[in-house]
Length: 304
Image (tube, rainbow, N blue to C red; front, side, top):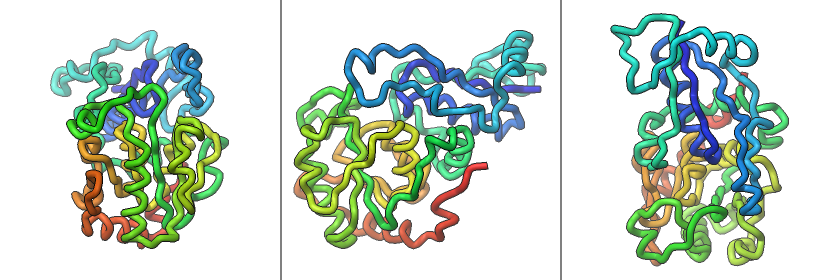
């Protein structure tokens, strides 16, 4: 047997899932069997920074469609291991465990490339791995816009740095307010919007003051991610978390200039950037409306 093992490390959920996603796709395409990742990783940073999400991901996940527990331990104890880059199908002998690591430099342009177009399948796998108590309790409102504002450990940067594509930086709250107004101009002023963020209410005050904007309840990171995947449009941050939410639900994603970072959807019209003072492309509005009209069973796959 050939097995795949994702080494998720101590990263945030979006980064950790990159190794998991590559491993799942590789195992599917090579007829290999996935081994469950080790989610129990000591993380001190979230406590020191007083983040809302303490990143205790071992509480969120079970083995899903992968092998775990004692059987996994026996396989790892008795089977040779090789890194993903060193695997050669023509020379590989079984049994063998192929290791998938999170990319250290966290460049989302490289990280997400193997996952493009695989969102609906990965969503089913993620839901199967997520404990039932952490799956969204209800679907997001029909036609709703999700807004993801990443603050937390992201650094403050000026508008020029943001527009140049610097990664892991905060986007000004005023941009989100303007993006929502312009998106509603194309979709309807009454379109509901749900805010997902690791920031405090005082930091998000200008956005929360906009009529029709409600904040998602305090919940786990994977619950937020799967909830975003159920929206019909996303105003995203320059974060892998936003990209995952868009990818898993094939949700059209609007980003600030320089912060789209990578395309993960099949339709080129479903991902757009918005500069301050500019209009949203009509092709993006059309992509959101097309997403709204999808059959319910296509928009929301069910876990096994």
